[in-house]
Image 1 (cartoon, rainbow, N blue to C red):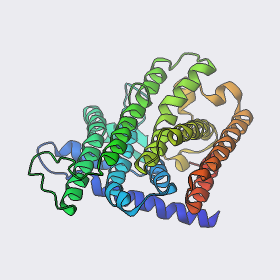
Image 2 (image 1 turned 120 degrees about the vertical axis):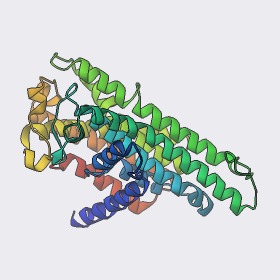
Image 3 (image 1 turned 30 degrees about the horizontal axis):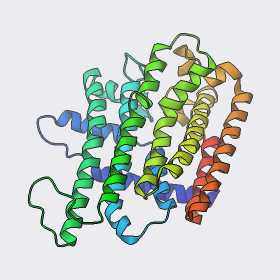
Image 4 (image 1 turned 180 degrees about the vertical axis):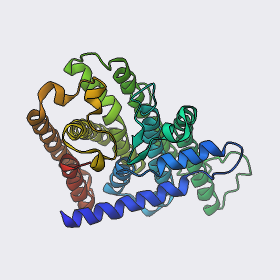
Length: 334
């Protein structure tokens, strides 16, 4: 487990470096929101979503030409997904939502910059995610054309290189996944139901709907985008979707458990907030023991499904790390 912890730390630092590289410069008349974007993203966190995206990209075989083109695009998507996640936290903390004044051990964005800037920062992050991913693809196309000796002028880059349509298809699908898992049929849709049902008694079916969309969708999307950018098609993406959903629900139930059993110092945010906001959780329906058992069951199922991907000649070390990462998620303390 010590070796895994060191490995996790190293990989998380790689994600941190990539994310910092894509943050905008803090200058111009709109610099307040740019500074707030930095403040929000640099607050830290597990970087779980970009980490999962990176590892699912590394999991599958690809030739050197594919990796040369796609790796900068992958890095932009890793950052974009973390920005989408951070945007959801900025809005989640607002007084009109959960009203949390602290996030990750320091003042939440709205409490630090004001409610107006807290709202606009979330908006800015959600839009900038698509700007950097689109720019990364355009730059990759320009580089590929130059390397092939093809001049396309100063206008929007054309995919002039003969073998480039496969890259465009992978990028388009990844962009669709990023939008879909973030929007009304993904994370945002889950937030809508979560907000509307606060203070009301939920059925388990309604609760699972929220968990699948609000939490699991971005984790699932991160895994799928990583595989998609590695060149994998619908069959593999469908398998990964099932894995991601189970990991995401287990992750959320573990959050419910920690909200009941941890401390503010360890979590870096208020505890018992679900109870104070009169929210139905898996723990409030089933209790702690049954919740812990469900986390383990879901995680075991996800790990077994993960192993079935070995038929696609996956990287052994990456597969082992992903199995250990799934196990870590159910035993984490924050």
